[in-house]
Length: 288
Image (cartoon, rainbow, N blue to C red; front, side):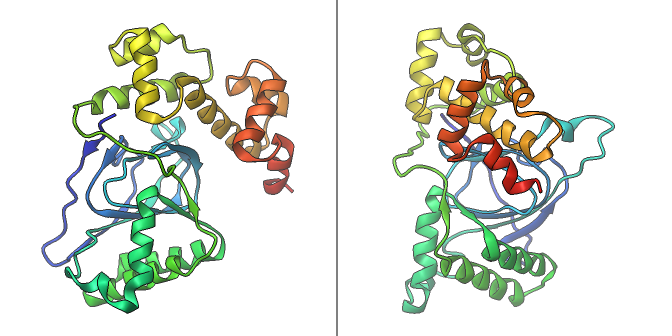
């Protein structure tokens, strides 16, 4: 599974990139880059892929993605409709691990930051009070100039490094292979799956999308993602169910079938397996 290598450009007067993305299609593909990425979703929701991890992303999320770790934020379909009133807003920071010099991270005072950047190679989800603090600092960084940007970045990383409730996203064993040119294939699989997961996707049709045989597809997908295609679809369906539960417009039975599950027993089983909660317990956390 070859993600696309993206070149992150910096303005001549800055040593790292700080930008605000207001469009849902910016970097809306499976990609990687040598820079570390820190993103704060100010507004928006969709499906997030980091390494072999799949989960929903929502307004307020803060995620740190390590160097060379493939990732992909795919906004919900509603953001791409012609007359939509939905809007996306994300603050995105890219920086090379050595942009402040080869020896900076080896200073004893910077050991927590060095350790954090190593851990970030699995992807880190920052939550709770730490996420709110980091989000406020990122807002300041977007508006800052000159040296102040570097100072705020160090404060951000120090704040995350000091949190003892970080969530790692990709599994320890995840590895990506950059030998074959497969970016178009994996993006086609992801896009087709996200557009059609609410119905039964036949193995023959997804294999056609990938332009390989059915038997080859099963081996290919499992070897690249460490999960079967069926598991992949279940994770997407559960993520969509989480969104609908929070919206609280449909009954749990309606949500079950809306998300592509065939029966309530299977829905409850897989939902609890992935989230650790029953659908009703999950909904009660968000709906008063």
